[in-house]
Length: 307
Image (cartoon, rainbow, N blue to C red; front, side, top):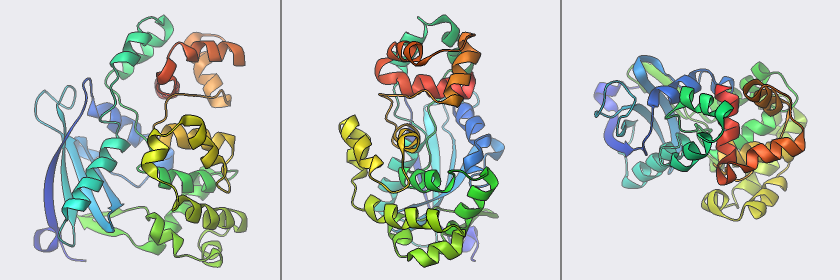
């Protein structure tokens, strides 16, 4: 593999972020998120990762843009893109859109924070997380695959299966002495037959789900999934093999940024109890969530992260 100094093509891009935005909070979440362990670097106040977009594998290094001390209050992020082939305008546009969405840079938190000020127990959570924009999975397709892999197996086993898929495709790039791996795109995983997936991950049922879901996902429009009518999007997700109620909710919020709805599960119930000081039933949970309207998904995510 050639070195950055002699072989890599570089492009610098500024990514604006809606204020308030604290990149340190994003890095803190990423560094403690077990599903993404080992995939990204968070040292020296920078985020490094590899992405696969527009048929290219690119390394990305993100740092807070100048404008304020540290990372808090900065005007956005500076991104350095690196690739072994010339970086096309199409690739730049696709990568910047992906990073913006992944880190929630365009999320406008003003309305959410106004509602939080009326909710004293939760206002203390917002004070701790002020400026944190929800970090999603790097792509909803990656989350689709993870949702299938992580069901009913220990986290280390799921990560091992995911790593087998990543390494089998080989989206690797070495940047500044750091080896980065990008999760496969839809076309790359669609090339695998079911038997090949079984051999890679060692689980017949999950391989069958993956084989069928990848092909169905290829027929979906991500823009529609991000912006289309909520119930219609949810129904389409539930038609994917291996995706049930919990996985669909996971995909909607953490993969597609759909904040309109939230469901009560055991982990959410524990988060609510920690913040509000009491257990809640379904009716009270819905009452609390409805206060946040279209932001209830953000409310739930903040509860989990900061509660």
